Image (cartoon, rainbow, N blue to C red; front, side, top):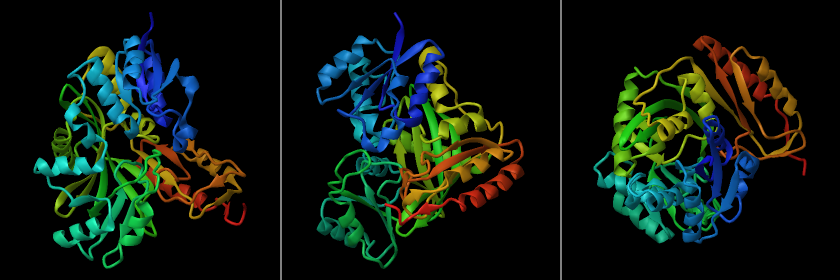
Length: 414
């Protein structure tokens, strides 16, 4: 009988788990945590990748029987939406081998996440979840944050979906009203909104893979982001830090504390941290792999990835404590300044001639409707660059921006 791994919500790059396990003779079965594929992820849903697909219709006992029938080597989440279902399945199939079940909500919902970090005494940003404007106003007054810069966002979304910055002195209520009751990218209604004090600094990502409570560092990445109006999550670039960089030790130590506070024991985490003048402050921790093109980038930069570590963990019982950098690597994100119709997607092909070019990702052919870039979900695309020489990488990035500026998105087209 063939061996199987269960992948829950394996959209987009999470589908790479299937290829990596198949190379080791293990077939992948997809389980979607929803009765139908999520609309915002349809472009990344490739059912032909998997030996079988099952949908969760709310009957957990039935789903457990189905999953148990495969006798899986592992049950792995593909995105945030899968985290709680994976926690529940593992606790049914192999109790005590997954992440702490009693803290499952803290690994998915940003409000209990913030509460768990505060309870552990870890330096954090003041945060509150409000269901009404009155609750929000009372909290802002009680904490002395009235009139201060704030961030408002959904509790259970991702990819900077719905993240709004309110400048000091500006009214936070319009952003609150827009978000409250809206539907996020996971088809969930935002019935309460997270308010958080704004943290100025540089944002980093710490990617890890843990085995039986031992956390292994797989990569540390510096984000470059920009703002577009009150939207502060427009991705520009990602660069990998050397393991000997002093910042790596600071960020690793902080991440370990956060991971313990939310009950991480096994598997991937993707932790976003703002390094402020007062030290690191958690933006969020997600108990899943780093998405987008991050696994491809990590393989170029470090010679390894979270996906590869998952395969070695579950099939070979291997744990890797750290990482190395084998060549400078950068992800340059592409953005659209306005929505409209793509007119000249072919200009992006010039990026393929760059010395450090590795891969181009853009899903908008000519004639397609392009959204204005405001978050990770609405990015125009990305280009993956890697070369032995950092100077080449920097020169090619400049050329990427020059090529990106030639893209024509016609705002007047229907």
